[in-house]
Length: 152
Image 1 (cartoon, rainbow, N blue to C red):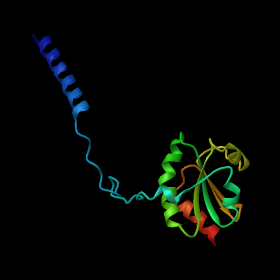
Image 2: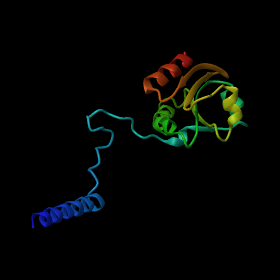
Image 3: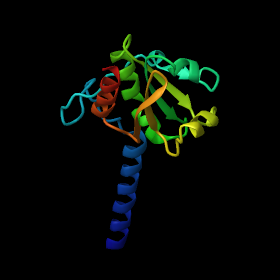
Image 4: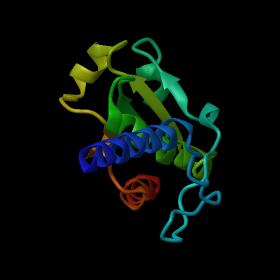
């Protein structure tokens, strides 16, 4: 009798878990721009402000002015993680610097030319020359500092 009771309780618990798991409500969404700790996060910006570079237009594009070029690939998780920051910088530096992306899978010859061995690699160019190079998912402050130094 007791054995049947525990078996029934176990079955009911499993069923309750399955109902909650498959039919349960999604957790409430966090307010826009705030993390659970209450800190402000980067707001999404317009990805169309980020220029797409290719092997054909790369040299002409970075030849003059300041450019931040994100060497990335679609399959790269860290590249996707830093994309909102890159888009935010494109909006913040509009008119002063150009923010661009180069897909290393589509244009490996450009990545090889600049010794891009890991992605994301972000390179700041000033008048066609490498001004600074950042590797990995870097903080927005580091990218801002690199762009500001190149703009001086």
